[in-house]
Image 1 (cartoon, helix red, strand yellow):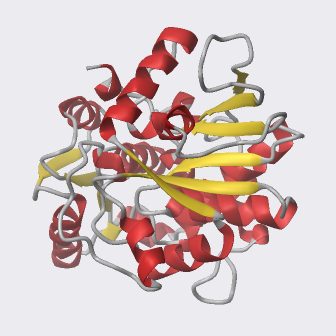
Image 2 (image 1 turned 30 degrees about the horizontal axis):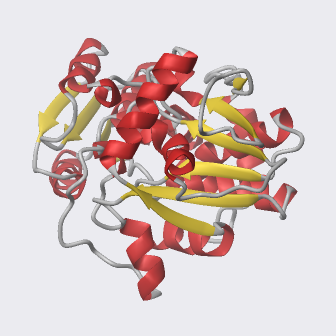
Length: 319
């Protein structure tokens, strides 16, 4: 990682891309042009399918980069984290790669199928607290008590750099992209992706999408400082921290052009569209970019090329 504490650079993201090559998937893109949809209008919509990662989401990029950047003694102590589900799966995957144990703390809002998948990968699963932040407090206490290595889901530079490899792929795969739509939870994905894309294509517009029931970054940007939400009301648990972290806030403030909000119902409708038109089973967070287009929360000029990330697989959007 960069020698300067608290930064993530294009060089860090390129190094992460080399480090994780062959250990995570270089995921495809899907041009939505032939499909019936109010999303497309007179512009081109391209879906970046990181829902096809081994764990079902982009999170594996940051987890594997972190594992491979870590001294072996830290790996040997075991990996522990808190997660809405997807980062936990990524850490379980990385722990198996590193031959060490994984302990995953989930809030009660995490889908049961993700807990079941974690157990199938031999991770220890602990359900603690109603939201991510409460699970994280319990996990960090356990890490200190047992000497395990805690891997935060969105704050470490190694995680952000790993997620930023998505930005490199988008630039390589979609030559004419001018708008990129990214779901935001804690902000690790959009912080890394935006850092990469703005360094290479500064004129590309980066838009972050949050649930109305968890406007963590939206509230912090409006206040000009880190804000802790009083409550979380979205059912999209992978987009639901009450607070982001300083580095994420800094990178999002520097590189993300707009932040918009969408409802859970809008994400659910977008997930149904992705299933009906594309055969993609996306969780609510994975459908957030399409939801922003369908609702008009994001508008695009005719002739634009828009990339929407389908960042997580799941079935919660199809209920």
